[in-house]
Amino acid sequence: MTALMIPSTTIQPSPVASGMAVEEFFKQFVDQRVELVKGVVREVPMPGSRHGYVCMEIAFLLRLFVGERGLGRVLCNDSFVQTRVNPNTILAPDLAYYSYQQFPKEAELPDGLLPVLPEIVVEVRSPSNTWTEMLAKVIEFLQAGVRVVIVADAETKTTSVYRTETLQQIFRETDELTIPDVLPGFAVRVGRFFE
Image (cartoon, rainbow, N blue to C red; front, side, top):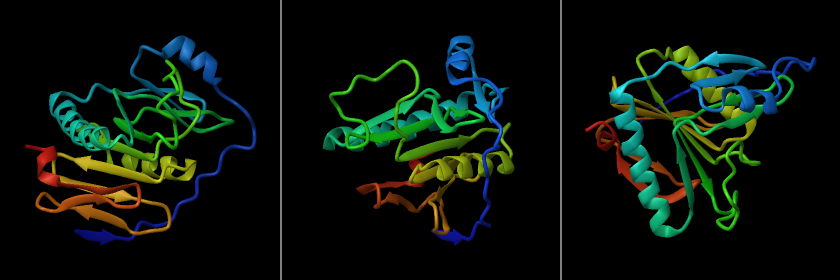
């Protein structure tokens, strides 16, 4: 595992409310591959088979761990997460983990946004993603209150783990990815995501 320091960046919301409302966004775009970024709708390209495979492997391993322990839910397929208001930002992470403490097991999952943020977000870098775009998303999620953001990169067979106020951690193919602050006991060799 390698640690790198990320320069601190502060993204401040615009003081003027502008752009598309959340309700309007869902009404018009709920079945399309888009995100709402600072009130502007942006198309999200289809990432391809390799991306889908890596997403499924990570989702399976996370779901297996949390399911066996009754800890929470893992959502995939670009479930929407609102990170900002005025102007609204609604991102679609590849995976999101919500503990039952954050969103109770008894509560019914809505079709739209959940009223809380996930504790973990996982993004799988696709060929069309630049690292600048990925880091902008990481910062957006962390500043909104997501505790851990993980970026998996099939090209380098690594995962980068980000938290507010700590160094970035890079886990290589032979390293075990752990998330002790959110999922104590979870440990998986990073290479399993890409096999």
